[in-house]
Length: 174
Image (cartoon, rainbow, N blue to C red; front, top):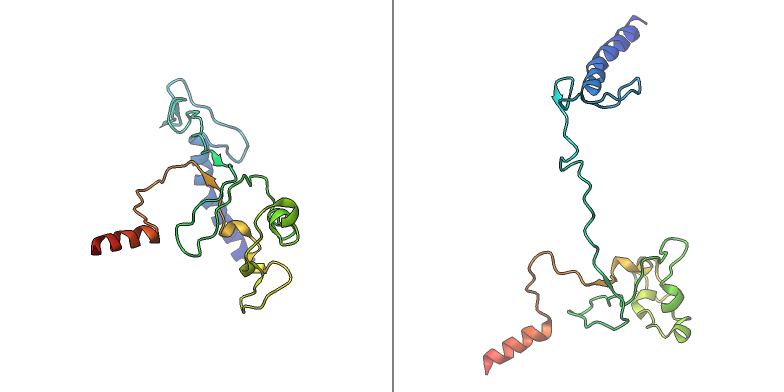
């Protein structure tokens, strides 16, 4: 019993400096009162940033990049590259209960929507067995397929597609 009281007393003593530091730096303390800075901009001897400090400045967010939604198929850069999504998908629900993509791209719905049907690979399980519905590992479309934006690359990119590489190699042999 004495040990419990001793531990509780030590814990209380250890917490007191944290409470006083919170009060002196303008943080809401345990008694729920906010300590305000004085006319010199200090609280308990600590300089508090003014309103024009970068951390308190109200800076507008950078503009997001515009989605490309022209419904034009994009050329694939390499073999087995997943097709890019040529339309907006911002409000599409894709979770365990529903997959909005399948309302147009499922094999039963492509006639009415004129959307390309999912590849046969989307109906195969990991053992290569063909299923009647989309395989679970291919259900979450945006793991592989991405919409396009007008964003520029963040880092330089010197990627060349296969045909370009072949063209350079054949041109050098002539």
